[in-house]
Image 1: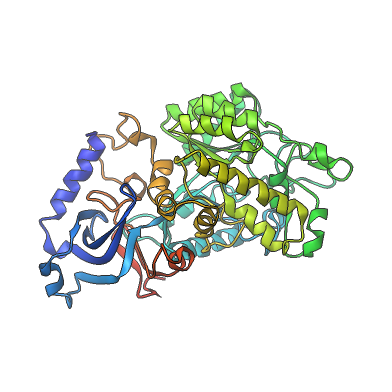
Image 2 (image 1 turned 90 degrees about the vertical axis):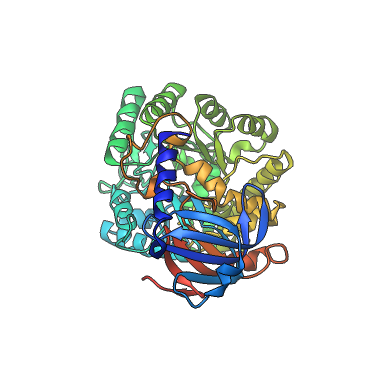
Length: 496
C-alpha cells in the first residue's frame, strides 16, 4: 500500500467514529464494475465531511428500521452506480448545431464562453456525470483552471463534476484554426488561437512545462488529423443540411486545398515529428502528468503507443488497419482508447442523414468500434467529445456503444471504472507519492469510478432495467451525489 492509499484508509477510519458525520444509502441494486454484476440490496455508508465511502455491504434489518432518519436515504427502488465519467468534454464549446466552432471561437467573448461553461458543468452533473476530463479550452485561454477552482472543494461555488483539465492543448504552426481568410500565413483571428502553437523539440517542451506550471491536470496534443476532423469542426445549424459539405474546412494543414483538391485536403497527416512527440510525452511524465493525443493518422498512433502516450482520442485511422493497430493498443494496457463515437453520430443527425461525408465518417468509426469489440479490447473509456453535441447528453456515447454490440455491463464499466483508469493521476501507477507525505487530499486526488470503502462518494441512481432497455434507464437519473453531497434526489435538483 502506498503512502497515499494509507492516508486515505486512515481518513476513512477516523470518520467511522462520528455517527453524526455518516449517511447511509439503501440501494435496490448496486453495480460493481470490477465484477460486472448488479448486487441486490446493498447499503452504502458515506462520510459527509470527507466525501468518501466508509462501508458497502448487504442491507440488514437494522438499516431499514429507522428509515425516517435524515441520515438514511431509501433508494431501494433504484439501481445505484458509481458516478459516470466523461473522459472527453469541452466545457467551453457548445453544440455545433447552434454555432460552428469558428463562430464560437471568434464571435463569442471569453466572458460569454465562461458563463456557458458553468451552465454546461451543471447540466453534466445533473445527468449523472460526476467526473469529466476537459481536453482543451479551444481558444478560451486558461479559463478552465479557474473553472476547476469554482467546482472544487467541500462547498463549491457552482455545481458541477470533478474537473480534470488540459488547458490550451498543443498544436503546430499552420495546423489549427481559426484561420484568417485574409492573411493566409497567419495563425488565429484577431489574436484568438484555438490551442497553443509550438514547433521543434525545445518549443514543445517549453509549452508542456508552461501548461503544467499553469495548473493543467493533463497535456493534450493534436498529433495527427483526418478528414473527419475537418467535417466536425465546420458544421453549423446556420447551414442547410444538404449544404453542409460546402462549408470551408478550417482545421488542417492542407485545408485550403479543399475547393480544388478534396483528396489532398483530407489526407491524414501527422502534425508533429517523433522527436517532438517524445519531448512532450517525456517532459509531462517526468512531472507526473499524463498525455492525451488527438490522433487519426495510423503511423502517428503507432508512434504514440511506442512513446507511451496515456490516451488515444478518436483514432479513426484504426480503419483500414484495425487489427495491427488495435493489437498494439491491447498490448499497451496503460494506454486507454477513447473512441468518441457520439461526435460523429451527431453530425449525421445534424445533416438529417443527407450529407455523404457525415455518413461516411459514422460508417468508419462504427466499423472501427465493432472491430475493437471483436478483438476483445477492454482498455476503453467513455468520452463523446461532448461540447460538439449538447452537454447533458453525455450518455449518448454509452448508448451508441450498446447499439454497436457492446455488452451493457462492459459499457457501464468503461463509463465508471474505465474513466478512473484513464483519468487517474500518474501517482496511482507508480511509487511516486502525490500526497507529499500526509498533506490533505483535494478533489482530484481521490479514487472514483467504483463504490468501495475509501473511494469517492460519487453515486448516481437510475430507474429502470439496463438489460431490458439500456437507453431509457441510463437517461432516467433520479439521484446524484458527488463527494458525499446530494445534488439531485427523486429527480429534483437540490443545489443550484
